[in-house]
Length: 75
Image (tube, rainbow, N blue to C red):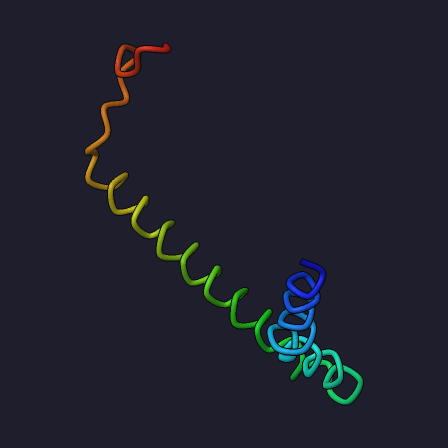
């Protein structure tokens, strides 16, 4: 049973975390290159936020929402 857990440790440490180790080594040489994935995720989030705001503006401009006082049951 001990070998099973050592195999799991070996899988994670030597195989699955290898890309992260490469990024950690790259950070010492070039900070911007090491954070490329972070920049990509920030860009995706920003584009999604702008798209969502444009969709909300489109529906708001069309007056499709019922804004009366009794429109929602909790009011």
